[in-house]
Image (tube, rainbow, N blue to C red; front, top):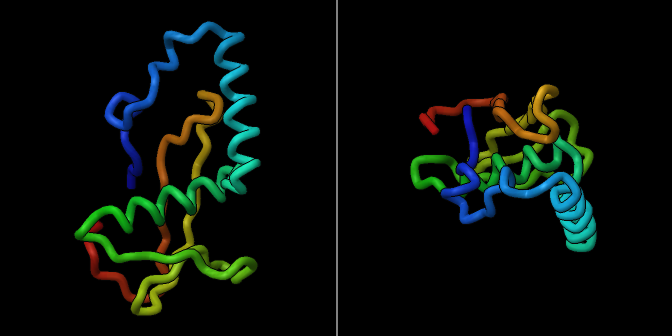
Length: 113
């Protein structure tokens, strides 16, 4: 399942226009700001945040909430109690570009989201 918007549709700058040094500076600033806000920094944490945001922003999808930290094999829960394990895949060929999100559901799930 693909999740997210393209950079252009999300109102983000065209990163291909950045020179290498500017791009590295941007990455360092982004990392510092994410850390300051307590936002996710690992691939798994980012995948969970993006997947939950995607589900909650689409009317045809089940609303999800984050599972308690250290809940074994469960990353998100639906209002009905369905348990979700969310896995993010990092494309090794393109540094830090998320190419797909795969959602694995434990329990009954009938949405076509």
